[in-house]
Length: 118
Length: 503
Image (cartoon, rainbow over all chains, first blue to last red; front, top):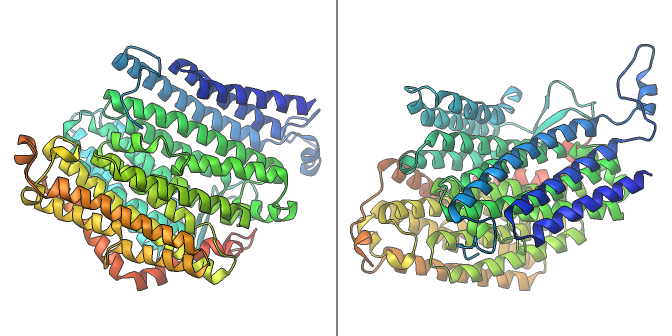
């Protein structure tokens, strides 16, 4: 079951990478980057997931050892929140750059956005 | 000294937000640049003071050494070397930027973004756990994407978008690598991961996948060949002080430094990783320099040379020999070269910015005769050119000499010969710069009417030029007090970073 989800997350990652490499439209490239970002967040959560696990909250009458044995790992959840926020910032900047590029070149086509040699 | 360590990150970050707030009030807008310079100067003083102290571990939020989940800042020899380099170049770039950025509107945005980048880079070199390393890398990267696009011209936007796409893919690989390492070990603290990976066995397929992801992500950030395509566009597109920061510090702090940290202190140096790093380093060295010779845009030429020099640093920082003493010598050379490259490449980018400002062009063919009209800039440009080409007694000569000698001693004569060849080609390409930009007759009216740059820009360049000369002559005390501990920090991975245990 959980292997299947890992494979699905990996498939999303690969689809995103494909869009970045093969697509010529800036909007599609941005969507590809978002897909990569989401796939990574999914994988981060999956790493801490435990089938049938309880929420990582210490209730009254429960020892920390018992909680650690039953609960899902909370650390990746904290990490994924950070990662989502970083992704938001990146997306905003990417879209802003895309809009500015459209203003300058009048197109989203990367074949026609080619003033640099490199 | 302990409470001062987090200030290295807090001061620039705090100042960055203050700058944004101050810019909304009319009479305070003029104070943003002095505030930024003061913050960076305080940082430089702190990092220089830290050099005199031993290794420091700082636990953010008081989690203490026994907890596995706290955020830890580690200030060892290598971190100190990098912190001094970052803050020194940052201070010079800020001073240079005061007159240079007058042509732009909203200079406070520039101040704020550059401060964010500096704070994040300080965080990168201090981070003691993998996830915070990633977070700081991302902050530095996002600030640098915005800074590359700062001018908002068509070419700059294009370069920034290219840089951003590749940089984001690199960050994604790094995060995936960190995720895999976490799922293997259940730890993020570098030292604990190192000791746990030793138990799992460093050769397992999952560890290899994580290593491959981390290394390719970091190679993208360090612009190693074949991941270099973004650098020659992105670095020249930024304003000159930013080019100096990107080429001088960012590709080291978020590329080569992290690579060395991951290889030595997390994964554990092995022959397999050494071969990969050496191959990438040698390729970058050769391809970078061969592409550089043909460039006519002075900033593009400098950008290609950054690929070359990072290649030679990565090549020797890969532990080319299993012998500890030899590996120490190689690392010593590599780290000295990192420091030197930060100094002379920033100097060259700043003088190219000064030339660009005064002549209005970056094309070498449109300059000429500047040595007579821009004496200080030309002098500094020459010092930088001689340093990067490895002419004695400048600092570049000593680091290249150590690298070549170490490679020969380690039994890699072919690589040493290649390093000599690359040094020669570097010299040729900088003779070209001298010949077309500084000597000869002025190519057009702009070049003929060029006058010397403002005093602050001259000051910034002279400071770096003096460092280029002095650090070459002061190699013995520098090696003993700064570079030696830095190399030890990488080789003696177990010493400070070992699990638990007070420093």
